[in-house]
Each structure stands twice: as C-alpha cells, then as structure tokens.
Amino acid sequence: MTRTRPSRRELLAGLGIGSASTLLWACGSRPSAVRSTRGVTSTSGEVRTWLRDAVARLAVAYPSVHALAVARRRTTAAIDVLGAGVARARREGLVLTVRDREGLWREQVTSDLSQAGVLAAVRALVGTSTRKATIDFGPPPAQPPAPPRFADAELHDQLETITERDKLDSRIVYAAAMIDLDDANVWSIAPTHDREQRLVRVRKHVVRAAWNGTRPVVSEAERSWIGGLDDHALDVALVRRTSQRALELMTPGVLEARERTVILDPSLTASLVDAIARALLTTASTRRPDVGRALVAGTQVAAPLVTLVDDPTVPTAYGGFVFDDEGDPATPVTLVSAGRFMAVLSEHAGGGRGRGRRPGHTGRLEPAPSHLRLAPGTTAHAALGDEGLLLEEARTTIVEPGMSRVIIGAARARELRGGQQTGRVYGEVELVGDLRTLLGAISGVSSDTNVSSYRDDRDGEPRWRSVEAPWVRTTGLVRLRRGFA
Image (cartoon, rainbow, N blue to C red; front, side, top):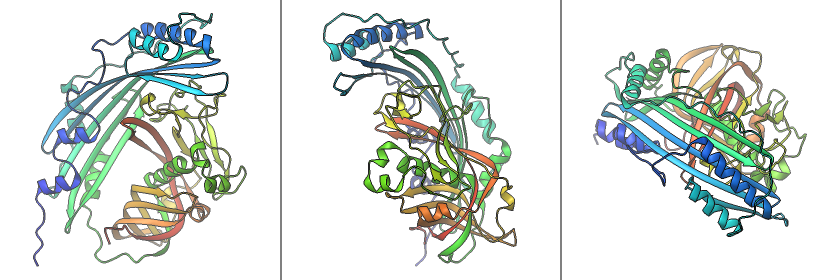
C-alpha cells in the first residue's frame, strides 16, 4: 500500500494551524476583540478613589477587607507562511474579598470597573448602608509609567525583523513568528495598604515545522520577560537554530527502552520543576493525604544538589510581580533546600510569605508559583556527561499524585559517548520513572541556566509563570513517546 505525504494545508490542519489569523485564535485572542463593559478607560486616580471608598464602607461590617482591581490590555501579532494579523483585547475586573467575625470568607467579583460597578459590588456585600470607617490610607503610591502603544505596522516590522534573516530551507513546510504583549495595571487596597503595579509581559516566539519521513518535526523557540518590547530579542542565531532542529534527520530504527544516564536541557528541567511545584508544592496539593504524608518539613525529597526557590522579585522575570493578588509584597520562598523539603506555596498567608494568585488577577484565588529558580551548580553543561543521552526541547511533563510516577516528554534525544555526540538523534522520546527516585539520582547540575516561561488559561483567564533552570544529569527509563513508537 502506497502512503502519500499530506499536503501543506493538511499538515497545518494536523498542527491545528491554518493561518496567522488562526494562530491568533490559538493564542486566546481575535482580531479587533474588545472584552469590556465600557468604552472609556478610567484614570488610575479615579480607580483608586472608588476602591478606597469601597474599602471604607466594607470595613464597617467586616474586620478583614481587600479590594483588587485590574485593567488589562493584550496585543498579539503573528505572521506565518499564509499571512499576518494583529489582535487586540481589553479586560477589566474587580474582586472584593471580606472575612466576617466568624472567619468566613466572601467574595464579590465584577467585570465593571466603573464607579457604578464598584458601588454595585459593595452593595452586594453591605446593602444600602452608606456608613464609612475612618481609615488613613496615606498618600497614594507613585503611578507606574504607561508603556508606549504600538501600531500594527510597528508590530509587523518587529515580526519581519525576527524572521527576515532566517533564509528558510525549502523543506520547511511551516514557519511562524508571534509577539504577545500583556499589559496589566493592578491595584490592591486594604485598610493597611494602598499599592499599585504595572506588569507588561512580553513574549517573542517562533515555530518551524519540516518533514521527517512520514511525520512532521516541530521546533520552537521563545523569549519572555517583564519590561519593554525592545528590551530583548530573538536573535538570528536562535531562530536559525530552530530551523536547523526542525530539519534535522532522525536516526533510523527504534530506540531501545531501558535505564540510561540522561542530561536534561533547561527546557526539560524547567518543565519538570514547574509540574512539581504546581502538582505538589502548594497547600491545595498537600490537602491530599498521600502528598501531605510525603512532604514533611526536613524530609529528603531530592539529591543534595537541588535547591528550589520561588522568587517573584527577580527583575524582569515573566512570572514576577511587586505584590501578589492578596496584596502581600513579593518575597522569595524556599521550597527545597539541599534536597530537603522546606515549605509549600499558600494563599491567605497574611504575612507576605505566601503566594496567593488569581488567573488574570480576577479568577479564583489559588496558591501558585511565580518565578521558580533551581540553583545552578559549578560545572559547565558541556562537561556534565560522557555517556548516555542528551534530552532536548520539552514537550509535556506529567507528575502523578503522591510523588509517584513522572513522564517527561522531549522532542529529541542525542546519544553521547566519550563526552561527545555520536550523531545519533532519536525524535519524540520520554523519560519515565518514580519521581522521588529520579530526583534522588540527580548527580550533576550545570553552572549555566536558561529561562522558560509559561502562559496558560484557567477558566478563560491567563496564568503567568517562569522558571530559571540549569542542565541536570540523572538516570531513568528512556523510551519513544507513546503514539510515536
């Protein structure tokens, strides 16, 4: 039976991509989309006045009061082989959180960040009473400077700058570039504080796809940060390397599934750390009896080389912030020190040691990581391994409950022998094993690191986080990914 190779459009359909317009939809935006109840944006001073008034009225009836408001704009520009497009969206919201004298928490959420919208939210909690507590909020904080706005033409120029010097091989069947700007102005006001922050999150992303036999090979690269659009760039060398990886021919034959020494590149290390933090290192996770029993303070959960800190104070970190969504100032939290479990991330901490975060700053409060840092070692990554496999470019990492099984997907595995690459490359593999065993087997950590960033949705609202990670050497079962064998 003759097997024909799919056409370009069939490939794009298989990748879930049809054009730059479709790519924008995949990013959660749509051209000219505006999600807001009003067409006029209020000034920072107006919003602060409404929130202070709301807190003063709520403080009469509740001993604990917090108002969190956000005005967020998102601009996404994309270009691919079939066209280009720009999507713009706006989102506003307010969360009033109170705790009564019996300790019961209540919330009132609205997407109407206007004077009338704030008043309606207050009335839902205290009725028509107009009494106000006397609160000295002090002088308002300095308003963060507004970032510059970019016209469609400027964004298109940026996209072309990313791609124009990358001379595409004819075997590249799909190429795309994207710039994503998420600009959030956040206010946090309570009887004890009045805070404001502006978080402009920037992502620049490229994707390349080429044929390897009868299936496509996809390679991606990204840089993300908080700051200005031009603070960092996807340099031409990185973009070209992405194309080369998509074109790389895989070694014929099947990779034998067995225990091996492996070196995880920073994207895989970051993917593993991110999955562990979200699945295990939060108060929500430790409510599960099996997780709670495994994570006792001081317990050795990894090799002594492993120290993990969640630190939103790192300048320009994509997952960083000045204060969390409970209004607590950003502070580092050590989760694992020299392989020993130290703490989990918690909401309602009150003392600035927690990590209460809301998707999109308006979603349901949850303990969640911000910017995770896995401490580097003292060895250059090129000197970490003489024999085994180098695993590159993370796919999906799954950590099963109870610190048991872990599955780490990688785009490729390169064979190492005598400290050199042999030239054998296997596509779409996964590292599988017991999580505690895998972490305990870590025997090398590189001195150099890279940063990976993540943006996903929870109930339609975005969650932002990042991980700074080194190359890591460990051992485990390596096999072809299920579905690719």
